[in-house]
Length: 257
Ligand code: COA
Image (tube, rainbow, N blue to C red; front, side, top):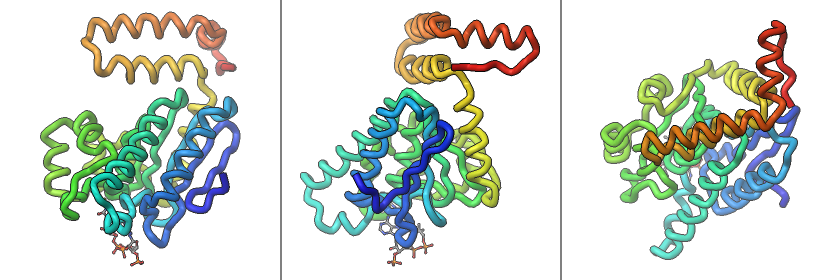
């Protein structure tokens, strides 16, 4: 597929998808959504990709669904659009590699919802995040009512979703929505630094860690810990586990597969 609304770059195991309609603050149109979905499938099929970054061109990550498309919506069209976005969110979550949302500016509505489907969010210090749908007479439809509550708790999620207010990067970090905040000037360089360090870690241990947290999250503690035991044991199916221990004892950097 030829991309006109996103950019796709790949270098040294790090793939970057950049939402690219800067004049519309990267509002999520049907076309952008289908290109994004295609790019996520491409990442899933490419064993060379070890880390995925999402970011936006210009001063926005994604400023929400393209509000223009709402004018033509009836309930069936709205349902299809939201269901398609959910498929993409689930596809992102199902990737076995780490996925980082690099929120360079506005992450609003569907933008914040896509970011929350990533493993974690980094934000530029000038970023603003929120679920402002209530101000349009609608509610979040791409997972916002569910993932936001799971990330920041029910009360804080309700306060954001019901008021529609935007939070800045510092508040988002205090809420636990954002993992780290970096200065805007060096933002992508900082994100790439982390991505490269993740790309140098063991594939099996990264995958086991991600899956243990994701799959265990909705289980009771005992079953979740049993799942962790299996994931821990799986790490020893890779030579990386012995290499990691050996490298530590030999006081050198490990060479993971
Ligand atoms: N859908 C469609 N177009 C959008 C958009 C969206 N979600 N968000 C921004 N745009 C467009 C604007 O219409 C404008 O286009 P134009 O230049 O052709 O008029 C362009 O992007 C720039 O936006 P503008 O509003 O002029 O920038 P700003 O700096 O004054 O304000 C925001 C930035 C993000 C506060 C404001 O654009 C906004 O509130 N956007 C909508 C956010 C939203 O409700 N998202 C949830 C949608 S479900």
